[in-house]
Amino acid sequence: MKTKILIVALALLAVACLCLEKQVAENRRLKENRRALMSEIRTTRNRLGESAAECEQLRLSHRELRRLRHLDAQRIRRLGISLRRAQSLAQSATRTQVATATPLRDTVILRDTIRDTLRFFRWRDQWVRIDGRIDRDSVFCAVESIDTLRQIVHRVPRRFLFFRWGTKAIRQQITSSNPHTRIVYTEYLKLGK
Image (cartoon, rainbow, N blue to C red; front, side, top):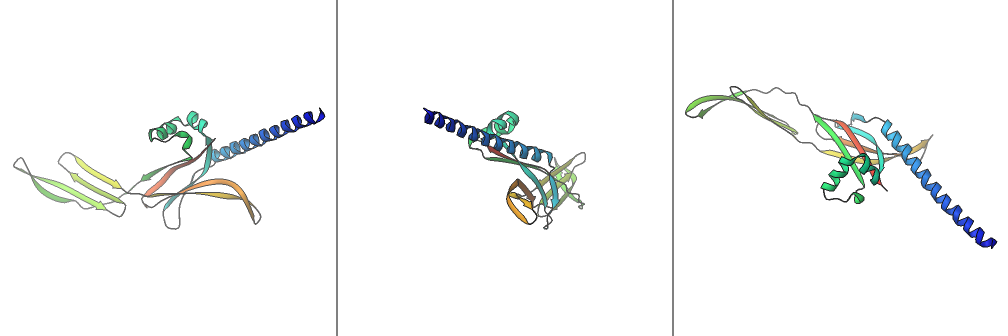
Protein backbone atom coordinates (compact mmCIF):
# COMPACT_ATOMS: atom_id res chain seq x y z
CA MET A 1 0.00 0.00 0.00
CA LYS A 2 2.78 2.42 0.96
CA THR A 3 4.67 1.67 -2.27
CA LYS A 4 1.58 2.48 -4.35
CA ILE A 5 1.22 5.81 -2.56
CA LEU A 6 4.93 6.47 -3.03
CA ILE A 7 4.72 5.69 -6.78
CA VAL A 8 1.65 7.93 -7.20
CA ALA A 9 3.37 10.71 -5.25
CA LEU A 10 6.51 10.40 -7.42
CA ALA A 11 4.38 10.45 -10.57
CA LEU A 12 2.56 13.58 -9.36
CA LEU A 13 5.90 15.18 -8.47
CA ALA A 14 7.26 14.40 -11.94
CA VAL A 15 4.16 15.91 -13.58
CA ALA A 16 4.46 18.99 -11.36
CA CYS A 17 8.15 19.36 -12.31
CA LEU A 18 7.29 19.12 -16.01
CA CYS A 19 4.53 21.72 -15.66
CA LEU A 20 6.87 24.00 -13.71
CA GLU A 21 9.59 23.66 -16.38
CA LYS A 22 7.06 24.49 -19.10
CA GLN A 23 5.92 27.56 -17.16
CA VAL A 24 9.53 28.71 -16.62
CA ALA A 25 10.19 28.38 -20.38
CA GLU A 26 7.01 30.34 -21.17
CA ASN A 27 7.99 33.09 -18.70
CA ARG A 28 11.44 33.28 -20.32
CA ARG A 29 9.83 33.59 -23.77
CA LEU A 30 7.52 36.37 -22.59
CA LYS A 31 10.45 38.20 -20.97
CA GLU A 32 12.46 37.98 -24.23
CA ASN A 33 9.42 39.19 -26.20
CA ARG A 34 9.03 42.17 -23.87
CA ARG A 35 12.71 43.05 -24.32
CA ALA A 36 12.39 42.68 -28.12
CA LEU A 37 9.33 44.94 -28.20
CA MET A 38 11.02 47.55 -26.02
CA SER A 39 14.28 47.58 -28.00
CA GLU A 40 14.65 49.93 -30.92
CA ILE A 41 15.53 49.00 -34.46
CA ARG A 42 19.13 50.05 -35.14
CA THR A 43 19.75 51.41 -38.63
CA THR A 44 23.34 52.06 -39.70
CA ARG A 45 25.70 51.95 -42.65
CA ASN A 46 28.09 49.02 -42.67
CA ARG A 47 31.75 49.07 -43.77
CA LEU A 48 30.75 48.61 -47.41
CA GLY A 49 28.47 51.65 -47.28
CA GLU A 50 25.32 49.54 -47.44
CA SER A 51 22.27 50.44 -45.39
CA ALA A 52 21.82 47.97 -42.52
CA ALA A 53 19.17 47.42 -39.87
CA GLU A 54 19.12 45.14 -36.85
CA CYS A 55 16.28 43.98 -34.61
CA GLU A 56 15.67 41.33 -31.97
CA GLN A 57 13.57 38.24 -32.55
CA LEU A 58 9.97 38.17 -31.34
CA ARG A 59 8.69 34.65 -30.60
CA LEU A 60 4.98 33.94 -31.14
CA SER A 61 2.95 30.77 -31.04
CA HIS A 62 0.78 29.93 -34.03
CA ARG A 63 -2.30 30.74 -31.95
CA GLU A 64 -0.85 34.17 -31.03
CA LEU A 65 -0.05 34.82 -34.71
CA ARG A 66 -3.66 34.05 -35.68
CA ARG A 67 -5.00 36.25 -32.88
CA LEU A 68 -2.57 39.19 -32.89
CA ARG A 69 -1.27 39.25 -36.48
CA HIS A 70 -4.23 37.95 -38.44
CA LEU A 71 -3.20 39.78 -41.65
CA ASP A 72 0.14 37.96 -41.67
CA ALA A 73 -1.67 34.67 -41.00
CA GLN A 74 -4.01 35.33 -43.94
CA ARG A 75 -1.04 36.19 -46.18
CA ILE A 76 0.62 32.87 -45.27
CA ARG A 77 -2.58 30.96 -46.07
CA ARG A 78 -2.99 32.79 -49.41
CA LEU A 79 0.49 31.60 -50.38
CA GLY A 80 -0.76 28.04 -49.92
CA ILE A 81 1.36 27.39 -46.82
CA SER A 82 -0.16 25.71 -43.80
CA LEU A 83 0.18 27.97 -40.77
CA ARG A 84 1.42 25.01 -38.69
CA ARG A 85 4.36 24.57 -41.08
CA ALA A 86 5.49 28.22 -41.00
CA GLN A 87 8.62 28.65 -38.87
CA SER A 88 9.43 32.34 -39.06
CA LEU A 89 8.38 35.59 -40.67
CA ALA A 90 10.65 38.46 -41.63
CA GLN A 91 9.47 41.82 -42.85
CA SER A 92 11.42 44.88 -43.92
CA ALA A 93 10.57 48.22 -45.45
CA THR A 94 12.92 50.39 -47.48
CA ARG A 95 12.77 53.86 -48.93
CA THR A 96 14.73 54.85 -52.02
CA GLN A 97 15.49 58.52 -52.56
CA VAL A 98 17.47 59.83 -55.50
CA ALA A 99 18.03 63.51 -56.23
CA THR A 100 19.62 64.15 -59.60
CA ALA A 101 19.89 66.69 -62.37
CA THR A 102 19.83 65.55 -65.98
CA PRO A 103 19.88 67.50 -69.24
CA LEU A 104 16.74 67.80 -71.36
CA ARG A 105 16.82 67.09 -75.08
CA ASP A 106 14.29 68.17 -77.67
CA THR A 107 12.73 65.66 -80.05
CA VAL A 108 10.52 66.56 -82.98
CA ILE A 109 7.61 64.20 -83.71
CA LEU A 110 4.66 64.24 -86.09
CA ARG A 111 1.22 64.14 -84.46
CA ASP A 112 -1.68 64.09 -86.88
CA THR A 113 0.52 65.79 -89.52
CA ILE A 114 1.48 68.51 -87.03
CA ARG A 115 5.08 68.84 -85.93
CA ASP A 116 5.45 68.84 -82.17
CA THR A 117 8.44 69.14 -79.88
CA LEU A 118 8.79 66.94 -76.83
CA ARG A 119 11.49 67.10 -74.20
CA PHE A 120 13.00 63.85 -72.95
CA PHE A 121 15.32 63.08 -70.09
CA ARG A 122 17.07 59.91 -68.94
CA TRP A 123 19.28 59.15 -65.95
CA ARG A 124 20.56 55.84 -64.68
CA ASP A 125 23.11 54.25 -62.45
CA GLN A 126 23.62 50.65 -61.35
CA TRP A 127 20.52 50.63 -59.11
CA VAL A 128 18.08 53.31 -60.34
CA ARG A 129 16.78 54.18 -63.81
CA ILE A 130 14.70 57.30 -64.51
CA ASP A 131 13.13 58.00 -67.92
CA GLY A 132 10.87 60.96 -68.55
CA ARG A 133 9.03 62.99 -71.14
CA ILE A 134 7.73 66.55 -70.85
CA ASP A 135 4.74 67.35 -73.07
CA ARG A 136 3.12 70.73 -73.42
CA ASP A 137 0.80 70.22 -70.47
CA SER A 138 2.04 67.09 -68.70
CA VAL A 139 5.05 65.21 -67.45
CA PHE A 140 5.60 61.46 -67.70
CA CYS A 141 8.24 59.88 -65.50
CA ALA A 142 9.20 56.23 -65.01
CA VAL A 143 11.40 55.32 -62.06
CA GLU A 144 12.78 51.81 -61.59
CA SER A 145 14.79 50.86 -58.53
CA ILE A 146 16.58 47.55 -58.08
CA ASP A 147 17.63 46.39 -54.65
CA THR A 148 18.79 43.24 -52.94
CA LEU A 149 17.97 42.75 -49.27
CA ARG A 150 20.16 40.23 -47.47
CA GLN A 151 18.92 38.80 -44.17
CA ILE A 152 21.17 37.27 -41.55
CA VAL A 153 19.74 35.75 -38.37
CA HIS A 154 22.29 35.21 -35.62
CA ARG A 155 22.40 34.56 -31.90
CA VAL A 156 23.86 36.95 -29.33
CA PRO A 157 25.63 35.07 -26.49
CA ARG A 158 25.40 36.01 -22.84
CA ARG A 159 28.57 37.68 -21.51
CA PHE A 160 30.30 37.94 -18.19
CA LEU A 161 33.78 39.43 -18.22
CA PHE A 162 35.53 37.46 -20.98
CA PHE A 163 33.21 34.47 -20.91
CA ARG A 164 30.44 33.86 -23.42
CA TRP A 165 27.76 31.18 -23.03
CA GLY A 166 24.21 30.36 -23.98
CA THR A 167 21.97 32.69 -25.94
CA LYS A 168 20.93 36.13 -24.76
CA ALA A 169 18.90 37.02 -27.87
CA ILE A 170 18.33 36.12 -31.50
CA ARG A 171 18.90 39.06 -33.87
CA GLN A 172 18.05 39.63 -37.49
CA GLN A 173 20.34 41.86 -39.53
CA ILE A 174 19.33 43.08 -42.96
CA THR A 175 21.57 44.85 -45.46
CA SER A 176 20.61 46.63 -48.64
CA SER A 177 22.93 46.70 -51.66
CA ASN A 178 21.42 49.89 -53.12
CA PRO A 179 23.22 52.98 -51.73
CA HIS A 180 20.13 55.15 -52.38
CA THR A 181 17.96 52.89 -50.23
CA ARG A 182 17.49 53.38 -46.51
CA ILE A 183 15.95 50.60 -44.42
CA VAL A 184 13.25 52.18 -42.30
CA TYR A 185 11.64 49.15 -40.65
CA THR A 186 12.43 45.53 -39.95
CA GLU A 187 10.80 42.81 -37.90
CA TYR A 188 11.57 39.14 -37.24
CA LEU A 189 8.99 36.73 -35.82
CA LYS A 190 9.83 33.17 -34.77
CA LEU A 191 6.81 30.90 -34.71
CA GLY A 192 6.45 28.00 -32.33
CA LYS A 193 3.92 25.95 -30.42
